[in-house]
Length: 90
Image (cartoon, rainbow, N blue to C red):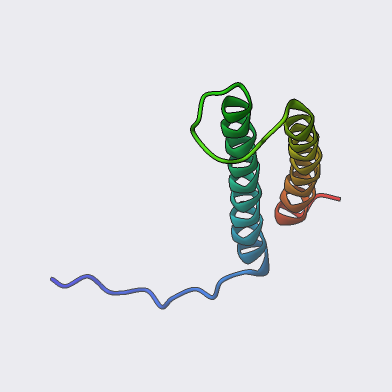
């Protein structure tokens, strides 16, 4: 006996918000990972371990590290806000 197919349920607004929030949180996490990869790589280059061309001096590397920290804080705040928005919390 063939199984009856149920009609497709419409996607709810809350489901869309959760999906978008999860996707944005993942995207911000990727941004954090990418910038810290560059900070570490430029640190190696500054120390004389030539893995990349970025970071000619320790001062330039320090500026890069501070930039990475600022971007990380902004992205974490954005992840928290988007997560709240996606879960429907206020």
